[in-house]
Length: 286
Ligand code: PAF
Image (cartoon, rainbow, N blue to C red):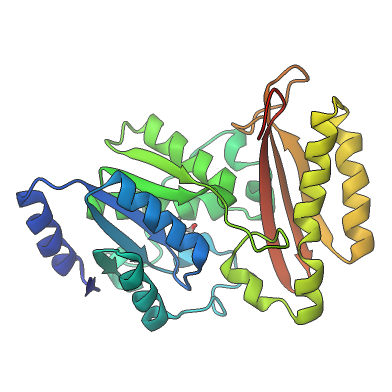
């Protein structure tokens, strides 16, 4: 696996792949890789002949009071894991490589409408603009045939899909299933902020989503009441929920006669903000 930091080095490597007409799969990450990321690499290996992984903690998608400074940076360990996972290229640029004309950039990409105003968009103003902008830049730099994103960030996946559709970007976006610890907690780099007591409580977030899913499967369609019950359960366990909602899989308003639903949550536990979602079908197994 090659490790490159500069865009010129990236282009040299990509030119070699392209001269062999090999398809390129990109996995954009912010590093501090865990099993969830490695499953994205595995998916990328199924979808492309060459797998490039970017590791870049993008300042543009963090709010002023968020964890940009303390976000774990573990490039050496990341490189080892990626090598073992069979990635071909690790692109780990600096802020000045991604934003060469100066930071913050004068040009950003904003996916408009409710999609970026609800849920995380409401609680993290500017976040999805930061994500769409950096993803757009990474697509321009790597020009992948396919890019793989985790379904754990369900709203991010919808935002990226919408951007690609709106702008006619010539690549395919693939989602990869959320990986969970045995107790249900979705794998996330932020889990390491949890102290042992919080780590023991954390799976209750997924349990709340699962309980709502069971209610939907049992035929309940009182979405607000279903969520309010689990909101109260989370609060009494010590969470400070920000949202807990049933939506359509595309994050539109859920319809009572729909065959599929997305249940999404964000909650603080101590100083850690956890997000999770559950996609369910009510006409068969999820
Ligand atoms: O999901 C992430 O890790 C980031 O939001 C992404 C897609 C790498 C953009 O910085």
